[in-house]
Image (tube, rainbow, N blue to C red; front, side, top):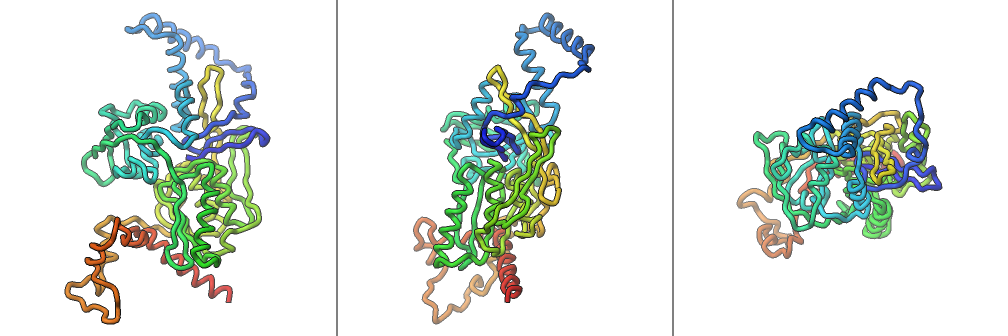
Length: 443
């Protein structure tokens, strides 16, 4: 979900890449509608006839206003899965979500092949803790089929008062039967950046979504990693964008800019001049050219695809993992006189090499699928130390593993993240190889 917000002094454009979480008045909405000499009078007469027949003869009494609003929704919903009409209440809810705090489940959803689909669960939220996964198809909400729901209606139903429960029926690839989840809504507050040192000099930054302060938090994370590295520059970095559904466009552009010395980052093409834009990198690389690996998967969408695509096209980073979601269209939010708004797809975005990500996604340079827990145990547990009755190291002060686990407090001695996460393990191995190659190249 990428949001494009530009200040009024900079054309006043508010275009949305993906599923919007912030609002600004759109310059395109301020222009008077273009008139056409080819007004479809016959179709308008038909529309008027249908409206009159339904209003007068339908079994239940429906107001003319409701009928017209429903016809608008139908017209827009037929365009593509991401365009839509928002009434005043839905528009208000959309603006409220810009605060980054609301009552809900903590999932980003969209329509894929006409089905309500989880793009990604947000880290440390009820949905993530319950076990929802990117790609899950939501087929029922509180027992009601989602087949006839549009995106706005589904989001409205899933949000609600913190502490209340909601039942979701999920269809998941590889599962023979639908899965049932009961999730308790909570106030969703998301920290978009986490970091740690994987090995001396090799840093790890996880970006779960792009918010207004994400890039600032990323720079803080880099500063802390450098501090942990005795003030020395990092030898390499893993940037984890898995299950990152997007967010603010400026954040994705600034993140790429932090690692590029020059070159194009992303550009857009649409029918009107306001929809055609290009973003270029400025001088300066926070890593001074140190190797980078970017991790992606099917839950990486929109803004995260911009970052991965730009770093991949420029040759700045190796992209590994799984093919991304493929959300490459731009939505503009156009406020209407009745207090509602129109969300309209107005452009597509392209990577520097001219690739349109729409419906294609970013293909990783190296495909690495995430293993299941049992597979991970097979990969990592076979060693001399794992064999029954193995000899101990007579010179070691380490106690038996089981005893250490018993003595650990609150999981502080838990296995490192890189051991629990196979894709990250492979990313680290590749990064170490890139560091070695880089050293040899610069000798």
